[in-house]
Structures are given as structure tokens and as C-alpha cells.
Length: 612
Image (cartoon, rainbow, N blue to C red; front, side, top):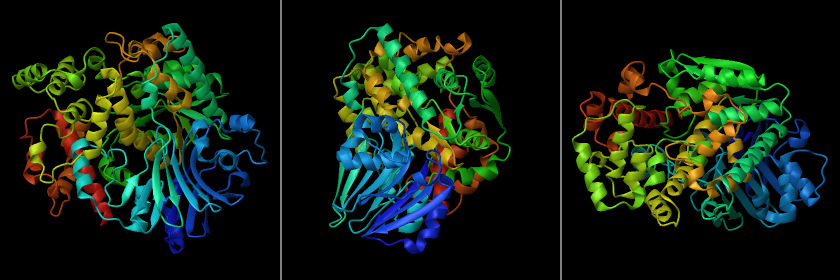
């Protein structure tokens, strides 16, 4: 795992030390750069494979220059497949050898997480590429004259100084995340998952090409029985975990909650590891899953650590934590994610997680109604009935209650607009308060993509799963885990996002994912082969933090100092009186939603202050 940076037609060699300093946490083991023609490439290395000089970057081979962040887990298999030979066992070398043989179509063969820049000096072409899911980040500045790219926005901003994109900021406040290629800056875009950018380095002309789309897998259903599907899932997950263990010259650990996703990964990893280190979070004010995790640890004899998080100093640490993201980021589960990564780094450098399982196999409660009813194409009578009924119901305040579940179901059933429906069913930040915006969110890209997904000939559940993969996973969950781990020089690996599982899971019959009201049905059945019975029927919890309590207690002072100060950024986007009313609890909204709205604006202001 590493950090990469580079430019075209813009010399930044004098800022070499600043670039290395900004990306040092992503690659503390080694820093190097190279200049070739009008291109400069920078690399900071976290050494995990081929720990000696064989993995040194930037790497050159026959006029090809590469800086690479990530891992290609099946690269030795690909060497055998194509008869490639090299003294170095580095997957970086494998990429160069494969490009020499296949060109950029080599991407189709990769099982891995990656963001790389490859300069072909012979053909004066620069390739920027990302993996299927978007595990490893890559941001691109392009003003038509010069181009720069970086693993992180913070250093890209320091070097290129782009201006704020107010339309994009308005979209963020409404959605609670930056949708796909959007960033808070003009001329800066995030390269999307499954895409590569080909740049002619003589003219500067660039072409964005989608080399992978998970949508294709949703359009191809597998004609196999449930038992065949269960056995294939078992086999493919075992392959994915084993590859992620074998592709490391260092010990690999595992995050272990009380859920089935991390439990399955841990169980399989333990069977293929001599002494697996596992880590569980125990937090104040949240459900304690440590006893469930302990049962898995005891069954498989792992070296287990419970990370106790008190949040006692959160007010003093929250700014630094949020600044790591380089953009406003308001998923509050980033807080425990950061702390557990920090604790794990004391013991290991590589850790497995269960990311992606929920979005591929139907792990959230909100998937259940979409399994039985197409809310995206419901009738006007349904919308009217839901809107009318919810007016007479008291606001739901207990997040995990049955009443809250039914209340939210009625709420998004009342929307005929696909964007409002999807936003209400997922992040649910400022939905219903559109009239409070001064600078109205445009939301062009997400509206267009939602329309496209809505017109697909797939089920309502598949539409929601597809949108979540493209949106919540890509724009929220994966950046959260990447920054939480890499801020601590820790590499996170996600077996559920393997090439084979991304090709397999979407094509499963939807009843294998949601059966009646049971979520992740096939994963729960698979868990019976590996895990204690107590874990199998546990509901999805994730990193549930007591945000509504924080907003009114430990974070109250710092939040108000930001939101009630003069010269705030948010007051250009949304009415300040409305935010003041939120702070004083004068807006009729649930405590949970109120906390999310306030934290979303707070994250914006923390980011904005850091720019000044």
C-alpha cells in the first residue's frame, strides 16, 4: 500500500519534500520520484511484498514508468498464465510485464485493489487506472493546460490550489457525501471505479474509459440451484481470503466484529494462517459485540485484542480526524474506524475486513421492503397514501426500533422522485428540507444515474443494491476505510470485493439474498459452516456511535463554535437561521436525523477552516 502523486506539464520538483511529507503516512518506508519528458511521478512506499529493492518505485521497464498504490492478489497466477519471468516477485513488476504483453486490457485479469499511473514514454501516453470497486483512491486535477493526480486531496490542494466548487458543496450537504467523481474543487475529479484515463502527453487530450461495470453482472442471472450457489460462494470466498493472505510478506490480521461478514473472513483466514491476530471494537454508548467476537476467536484460536474506545478526548481529536479526508466527510463511523485502525497498527501492517458484503448480498434492513415491492415504480396512490399517513404519526427517535423502521418505510414510500426516494432510504440528511437551501443542489450526475438504473430490466432489490454499490460503497464506505487505515499506515484488504465475488454475487437470485424478512440469507447459511450459532441471526449493526448524544454533550461546544461563527461557508449554501434552529431543537425532526444534519455541516466547516 502506498501513496502516489504526479503531474503532466507542471514541474513540482521544488515541492518534492512537501509532497512526500503529505503522503508519508501512506508510505513511510521509502519515498522516491522520477522525471521523464513532461511527466513527473512521485511515490511513497508501505513495503508489504518483495520488501527489498525489487518493489522499489517509481519502477521503470523498457520505457514504461509506473507508480502503483494497492495490491494485485493474483499476479503470480497471471505470471504463470502468460509465461512471464522476473527476478522480482513484486506485483508492480507484474503490471509492467503484463502491459508490455497485453496493453491496458490487462486490467480484465486483475483481482486486486489498485490505483496506478503508468507512463508509456515510447507512445507518449499516460494511463491512470482504478480497480473494480474503487478500493484505492485517485483524484485528478485537469485545467486543460496541466494535469496532476494524487492518492489524497489534501496534498493535491496544497500543490495545485484549486478553487472551491460551490455547486458541489451544495450537493454534498444534501446527500451527505460527494457523489462518485465529484469533489469540493473546480477542475478536480475523482477517477471512478472501473475506469481508466488515457492521456496523450503531447497534446494533453484525455479520454475517460470505463473498463468494468458491475451493472453487466446484474443483467446476467446464474441458472444454478441454491445449494450450488452456496458451494460456489464458499469456494470463491476461500480463494479471495487465501489470495489476500498469500500476497503479503508480512503477517496479516483481521477486524472481527460480532457479525457474520468479518466472522466468515476471520474463520477462513484462521484456517490458512499460523497465528491470526484479530481486533474487535468495544465502545462507550454502543452495543457491545466483543463477547460474540470472542466466541469466534476461541473457536479458531486467534490472537485476539479488544480495542476499548472511550471517546473521552474526542473534542480535541475530532478536527484532526476529519481533516484527514481532504474533503467534507460526515460518516460518523469514521471515528471508531480510525481508532481501531490505530490500535491494530501497533500489532500488524495488513488487516482483512468484511467491506462490500452488505452491498452485494443484501445486509441492510431497508433492503427487505424493496425485495417485495418496487418503490421506484409505485403508483401515485401509494405515494399519496404514505405522505398522508406520515403527517399524523409522531416522529421516530429510536433508530433500531420497529416503529422507526415502519416510519422510514412510509417516509420514502411517499416520494415519487427517485432521487428523494433513494436519498431518504439511504443517507437521509436534508431530504424534506430542500426549501432551506440558498444555493440549490443541482445533483445532475446522481439524478441521471438513478434514472438509468430505474430503467433497467432488473428487480427493485437489484436496483437498490446496484445504486448502493455505485454510491454508498464507492463514495462513502470505501473512502472511510481507506483513510482510517492509511492515516495509520495500515493496509486494509476486502475479500468480498474480489474479482470472482463481484462477478458472482450480482447474478444470484434475489431470494438468495433476501428471503422473506431475512437479510443476507445465503451468507447466513454459509456462516453455519463456520461460525457459532449465536452470531448467525444477529442483525446488522456496524460501528454504531452515539452521535445524537455527542452533538448535545461532548461535541456541543466545538460544533457551536464552528456553526455560530462569522464567515462560515455553509451560510452561502443553506440558511443560517435554519441551522441555528436545528441547534436549538426547533426543527420537527428525529433526534438521529438532526444529529446527522448538524454533523454534516460541522464536517464542512472543519474542512473549510483547514484550507485557510
